[in-house]
Length: 231
Length: 231
DNA sequence: CAAAATCGGTATCTGGAGATACAGAATAGG
DNA sequence: CCTATTCTGTATCTCCAGATACCGATTTTG
Image (cartoon, rainbow over all chains, first blue to last red; front, side):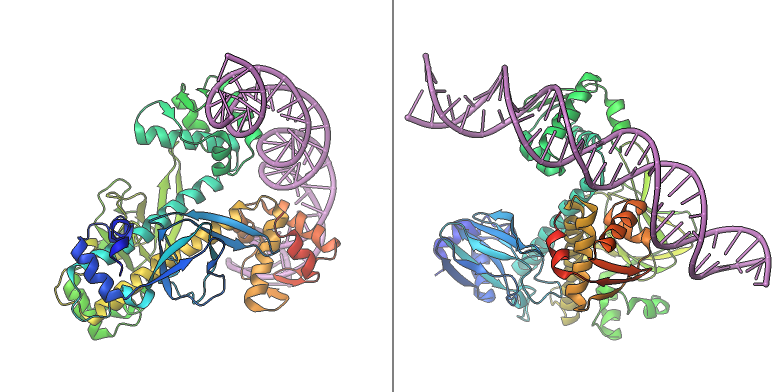
């Protein structure tokens, strides 16, 4: 019954490194449920009791949260192969903290939280990899969040820009940086307004610290960039 | 050899719910190493290859990170029963992202990352709980980070104060809130300066939204508080 | 109990960043 | 290839929040 989804499932991060036969066995053991939703359907609603980790098999969905004053804010856009609810699965939370809604027709795989660590006595070797994958996924989520906190903690726009560029430099080793983000997205990521960011970048260009044209950036004065990276 | 640490180990979050005999078995299986450090010793240094999750059996230690410009920033203070490195353990990182240094004489238990998920064929039932604990610890770290991001993303001081109070109200259901933090700590948590925070709180009191005296706060106009909670 | 240290509230001054508006560049689309 | 749309840089204005300083209240400690 799940065969037709296999080409998707094989590429889901939770199943990395597990052979098709292994996945088949595991799914047999996990006894997942598949839900089919029309556009606009609620997949899970905030406050509902939590039971499963979700995997998007087909379509797209939004994760949104209601702020205290009642505004709905879309936090993530889920697409094929994405998973959701993985953080809540093993926390002590018993209800969903967010709402997931089908943005287009969706098919979702639900993995029961209590079967994930394995009820069966003999833990098959695939299952072990599965758990490792799970741990990796959660860990990396935490690492990304941590990185985000680091950026958000920097007070000045200049500091944020410098840190951002330096991180790219440290990763690539090149002073020539090609960004995949446009100005709006970058400003959003750094949690500042776009004009303010542009203003600051222009100042930095005037000062001869960096140069840029559209999405191409170049570090000119690395020392200065480092010095300014924390305020 | 590890017996003398048992009273500590029993209370380590990773071992919650596991009986003493179970812990003994597990430690036998995990083959942990104990390190003893004098004040000021480096327990792990940033960049060093990562191999173990650490557990503080005795003493206190600091987790610090070097910023790009070379400043050392203490990020966490570890005390007895605290664990460190648990986020890195199952990520794809191969080196420590931070430095851990003994603040006073320390004894540290190191659990090898590759043994945690279990090499032994028959996964004992305690081991399953252990893994669940591990998952819970990481998940809850991620949840805390997420919460932190939420607060950091709020731009205005007023918004932060409102959200903070509302969260306490939602948890306790009482409009009377007793804080465990002093002003400095609260300002720190909200990532704002203390005088600015005090100024804003006083304004809110004038406006009849809240009242407070030292660490006791009272919500007077709940509606207004909600309305202002996001700017 | 007195002196010292910590803590909380307030005032002033200043700067940095947001909002808004607009124009020119780049890109997309017919 | 020309039009429409999106993207980017820049200017102006305003104001929120940080830095600093100081005073009174509270707590600590010798």
